[in-house]
Length: 255
Image 1 (tube, rainbow, N blue to C red):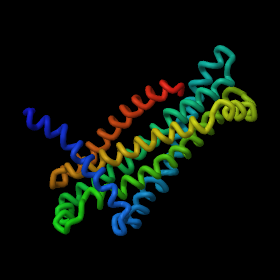
Image 2 (tube, rainbow, N blue to C red; image 1 turned 120 degrees about the horizontal axis):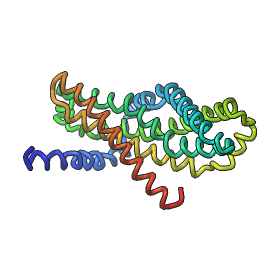
Image 3 (cartoon, rainbow, N blue to C red; image 1 turned 45 degrees about the horizontal axis):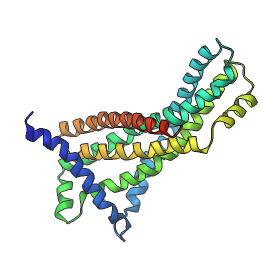
């Protein structure tokens, strides 16, 4: 790999981010906000993902509950499983699992859609007509994802806590009232808000990675497939790195 190629690989994502950021003010113009496309992507990223989010997060909460039961029963501290499950789901696994689902459903779809438009030269046609592709193609997806992912995270958090509670009541023999009371005692709005804030960051990363890989796809069928695959891999990597960084930052403020 030559120095020129390496510099190009490093600078092109920055240029893409700058072009998208400069297009954000166009949303507030009369013709800048495409309501129909926004509603379509909101349905794709949000409503169509509710079922799979609830199922996976419920099972994830149950798995954490099983592991908590095995370990906490050794020391007679079963009630503290509510703490473990609640904080694990709300602060880490809830936002992370929802982001993984969004990566597979929406991130790859964004890359494939834009990559197909590259093959059909529709992106070049937009530029020829004086329409900025970043504003026309990226912003509706970005806004929809920023709105949908935190809402999905709240649903996923509730499903995960309920899954853990089900294991606590059945496998550990804890009274449902005691488990729920402990959960309400240790969890607060801040915990929910911190998880939702993570999901906003994840939404931006997933959308930007998916759209960038779509724009970078070569003009053939193989290029579209490679672009979608690259979008998924890049999004997962960025989400995991961002999750680690945000978690460390949260630890500095006591969360």
